[in-house]
Amino acid sequence: MGRKAGGADRGGEDTNGNTKMGRTAYIGVGTNMGDRLGNYRKAAALISELPGTRITRQSSLYESEPHGRARNWFLNGVLEIETELDASDLLKALQKIETTCGRKRDQKKKTNVSRTMDLDILLYDAEILEKRNLKVPHPELPTRKFVLLPLSELAPAYRHPTLAETVSTLLVACKDEKKVHLFKR
Image (cartoon, rainbow, N blue to C red; front, side):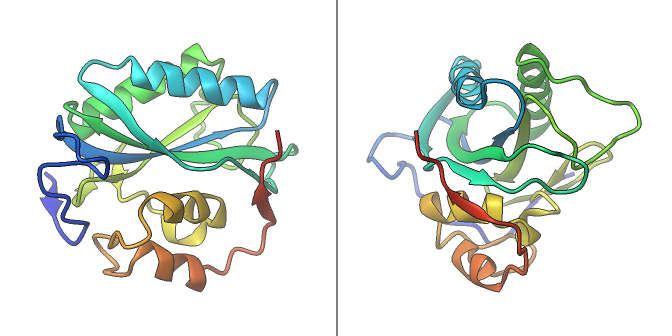
């Protein structure tokens, strides 16, 4: 079961003054195989087509040095969405998009490997979810500069629901030494 904590009080409108359609979620998007920019754009287009979902804002794109066994630099960004999907249904939809974009899911749960598409629910309103296959906020959020940097563009004052620190504060405190820079098209 989820519970609310912290977060940002957004009222009934988004940052552009539009009436909110549902819950606000922040989706981390990463790709380091094939046409990275094409993969990113395809994933964003497919997310925008999900029922009851719209992308309200997008961060800049960043290139980040790979972690673990991944070899190629990642292209990363964050999408702010409004959705009527609950977090579990959103996760299922994002996993289908990953598959559509060519991701092969390994049953051994290998992490930090190359992939055509990686979509993560970073934050889902101010919910705290601890399910077997879904943890929100994303457990690695505070330790990954490649996620915090684009997220800080969209929600610098958003309070992490369990750590009670703003995204900006988490970015400053992040010890991730991997290189991250703006993507030059």
